[in-house]
Length: 402
Image (cartoon, rainbow, N blue to C red):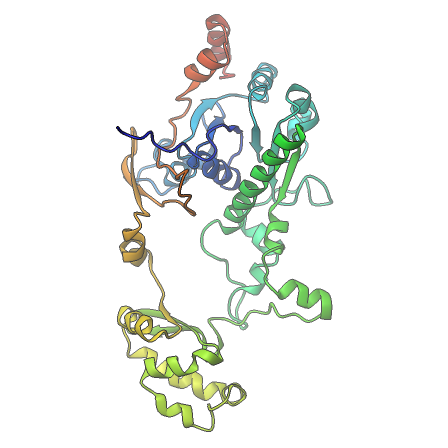
């Protein structure tokens, strides 16, 4: 007898995703991928601005083929709704009645001006968790400022710590500020849902990107708070001779050797003679002669091929790793063995390869699925579930509300 497939961990959760951009969509994506019924609410006609961001599979812009949108909205259902229109706001309030979570990324006060702020929605559904994601939070002198990923990185402290000391700060790749905010919103939302089910009362979750980034500056923040010492100064690719990124014959090698790893690093380099060199015998000696040691490792690395070094490093338990390019990542035997990458069919974009789950749950697995077409589930949600009368539904469509 065939056993039923395990249910998703969040199968009993209904989420309204009103967000635009990356952070809120990523929060909603994680909820959807682990089983929640996430309804993506987009502007009629144009949809989420992410639909206009490339790359596109065929190199030509198309609202249903944006790689960014397709990735951020997997497993969601999609509807269109103009919440700024009074009748659209009324429809949203009806949807909130049966929702557990609402995710939004509007400027602080925008939804309140429409009669859709958290106090108003809580009157409709006392158990509702509303997660608001902005650059600076719902209050404070910067609350109304517009922002983007780069601004959040800069004002959250990370940008000033990244790069070489003799150059301008270096931006990290991708939308890291927004993805970090989305990830924290995912965790905070689930904590709030758990609390709502215990206390039988929802709450408003306020995610500020700059606070998320300031919270993950490792030891830099406490060092400065306790001693007034700035340990977050940019140190480039080489923090010390045995902690850094070195160019090799076909790419780059990452080295991170603590005192206990020093013998293994020497075996990997086939330079065990350096163990008896008075310049490098003890940690304090290596610090004093850092430039000499750095030159030796640079010369050694320049003659190496990264995959061969990586293979030998694993055998010797040496703290050296190949720096993966995207091509290396796609070919990774570890990720391939675990079935990380997933091929997903989409009616407009076709069959594409997507990144897989950021974490795995044995009994309630992550699921692969596609993003919705713009307004794909309007009939299903508005007529079938919300119970709009066909005449009202038709009128809302003619008005551009849906």
